[in-house]
Image 1: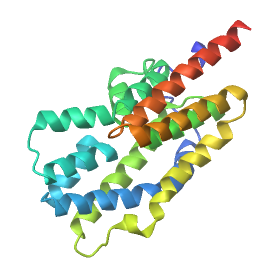
Image 2 (image 1 turned 120 degrees about the horizontal axis):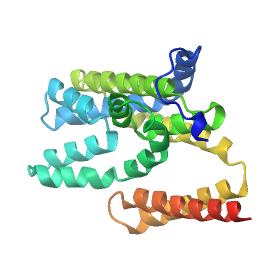
Image 3 (image 1 turned 90 degrees about the vertical axis):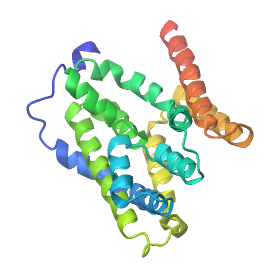
Length: 240
């Protein structure tokens, strides 16, 4: 396994950029409406076009941006409260980073920082799916990050710039495109009993948490439960 992990960015990976384009285009259908909405909400909350676009550029985390915009728009000015709230929402990134750490730690330090900054739900899902199919490619992960980063920031800018002319894009119903894309990435990986059990446990915990837990804690609960159950099942399989 260790021998398959790259130590540096490959000099040449023919076709990787076409692969990035092919994989990212469907996800864009879900990202663009959220980016437009982020720009619109930011403008209606008093942010300038530059401010909300700059926020997208340095934060690059949709859920955190929506929450921060809502908190600031409601009059909350305590940066410690905003940072703590967004940190709790994004705790799942600890699990995503830990999952990719065996690959990232073999790369140069600057590249580790760039790729770590680019880990969001969509880029993580695509990278993990690609690892399952063909192995890890830092160039692929970098390409996915760049593509999604540009799409998110451009759509945020357009939403802020044209917010008086664009209705709330989430009212169109096309926001379902993003979870549908994740389902397309998930279902082909449910190939054995372990994957099915982990998926079921995660789904049950997410639904239960959404019903009975405040805020976004259901995401953390589902992620931790899935990781715990998956680890137990994998250990049991190795012991057999």
